[in-house]
Structure formats: structure tokens, C-alpha cells
Length: 142
Image 1 (cartoon, rainbow, N blue to C red):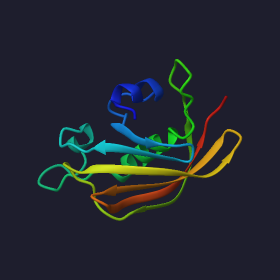
Image 2 (image 1 turned 180 degrees about the horizontal axis):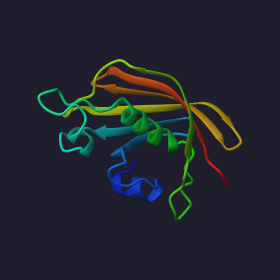
Image 3 (image 1 turned 90 degrees about the vertical axis):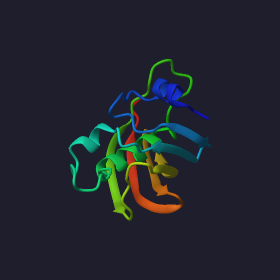
Image 4 (image 1 turned 180 degrees about the vertical axis):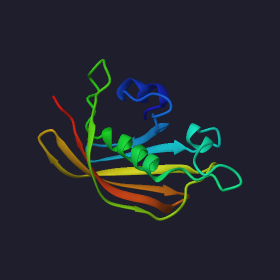
């Protein structure tokens, strides 16, 4: 549905903080995004340097999941990127390490929507195996 250029038009994030490569499904209640994890990612330079195994930091997995969830509230008609602010993270769990070569598949579903607040349940999987999950709350000011 959205390639990287379409995503860049909708999200204000830029390298190295744009953590969604593609949106492959979207409805009013659900969105699915992909993140290809490569060894060239800047965070691998200092997070567990060799000889330790390169592992994607959990906080960046959460950020990628939140950026995916933001597509549930973005206004496609706006010419400028929308800004949604992360205001809450609940029930965050990490079940599997994410390493270079993995592809994160992030699925967000609306749990609750109230005025400018959106709460979404988000799961990130790698090869069908749960890597992380959380409930995120975003605020999108008018």
C-alpha cells in the first residue's frame, strides 16, 4: 500500500529514526507494516559491539511498532506530515531477539479511540514468531 516514499510523506521521521519500510495492509481498525533489519543499521554500531551478537534494541522495536500504529490516525489528505506523540506504553514484552537479516512484521489494531487519543495493541513478529508486543497510546493534536 505504501512504499518508503509514501511513508516519508506521511510521517515526519527521517533517517535514522524512520523505522518502517513498507505498509502492506491498512483498514480503519488495523494496519500492517514491515521493517527490514540490516547489518548496516546505525544502531548496530554501538549496541553490543563485536564479538557480541548484533541485536536490535527493544526501544527501537517499540518505536517501529508505534510508527506503524500511527498510520491508524494519519490524515491522507494533508500535504504535510502528521505528528502523533507517543504518550503511553503498557504491557510491553519482548519474546525473541531481532537480528540482522530479520524482517519485522508489525500489526497494530485499535483498542480504544477517544477524541485525539488512540490506543492500539501492537505485535511484532519475525517468521511468524512473536518478537514483541505492547499497548501504545498516541495523541494526535488537531
